[in-house]
Image 1 (cartoon, rainbow, N blue to C red):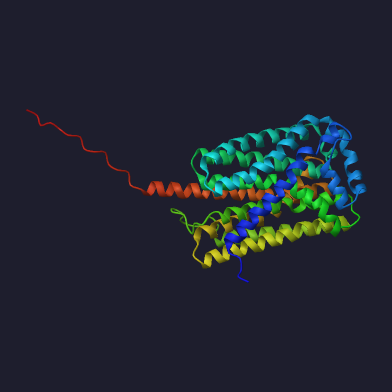
Image 2 (cartoon, helix red, strand yellow):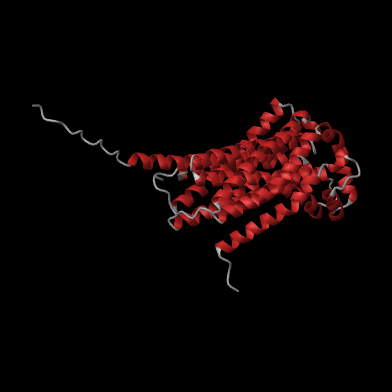
Length: 391
């Protein structure tokens, strides 16, 4: 059997993402019907109850009645529009791949407006809900707030890049935005899948394990998609690397020290902490291996731009534990959270935040290369004026 080509893998990934989005869209749109009208159809809850158990679902959702009803209208707006975004995302990918420029732009306007409206609903819910009243506690509230901020900022930067005519930057920011949005269906999948690996745990505990790696998974997927859609070996005006070996080595040392601290801290909280540590480390190790291998292969092949982007994101991944360690201190001492809650929240948001920062650095890197190239082009001298000899 002939091995798959890179285009085959890209096609398979696009089909998989589209299938997940189409599967989740009706569940998202109907998720809150039962809170607005008891007894209304709730297909998502029904399916999860069949996959795991009705008791597993009932015990988790019984505590959601008061917080959701307190902000029911914003939550319905958020969930219904979130389902619409699950449909618009694959449509945007398809129109971009088929180069249907006008349709892509029109759907892009709808997509951006829908993101802002949906995130406004989520923001009102978070503003009206005390962190301790969020599902599985304050750590999840912080994760949701971080995802909301990342989604809004990434779509905003994507719009600005499109207006400025920077298609490569626009593509990266919009893929990152959609990566953040995909945390919703992926979380539901993990609610149903993780009980097979962690039997007997309530959904609140399963949720804590899931949030330890969802951020790293979705931003890693956005990076893979960006690299797959950028065939350039180099970029004119690239110049010296912004991720030279000394910087990369320093990031590795700092990241390794922070990882040791995180591992010791989580291990000190018994079985619950060790579960979270495994849930964090396994996807982190996979992402690190792929980024390091991608940078190495690109360097050996002389693909300077590919190596640069891989290296920048690898540095961001190495610095994620450092950011997490700092966030733990902030949450514990400034927000007054318990040690385990602060640790969970800090570790959960690290990869998503540093990936956002790495995307910003990549964007600045491309803009800097364009500026270098622009300044290298000599400015034409003004034409000499015709003079009339004096009589």
